[in-house]
Image (cartoon, rainbow, N blue to C red):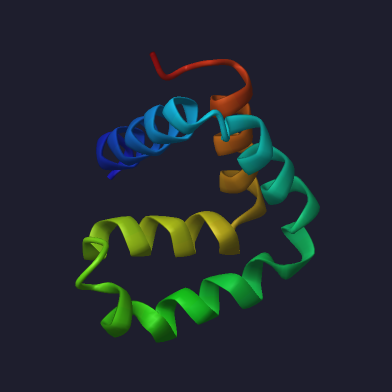
Amino acid sequence: MMQLQHTIWSQWADSLKKWGMEGFAAWALEAGAPLGLLGAQLIYIGQPLLSPFLPFEQTSALAGLLEDRTEARAFINFLKNGAAS
């Protein structure tokens, strides 16, 4: 599970870095923390609609990240520390 999470986080970080959005994503996760649980629930509900665009593993990982503040902080640190190359 942890290896899959690291792989997904690396993919997200690489994409965000490519678009120059890693700072914005970290800020949005920090600022939106109080709404994380609501966002996670919306993702869970919307998974059938998102499935043509994102794999189930991606949407599940994003929902899990939003509903768990510890995990969100870990991903923010992952982005800020440039763990993705």
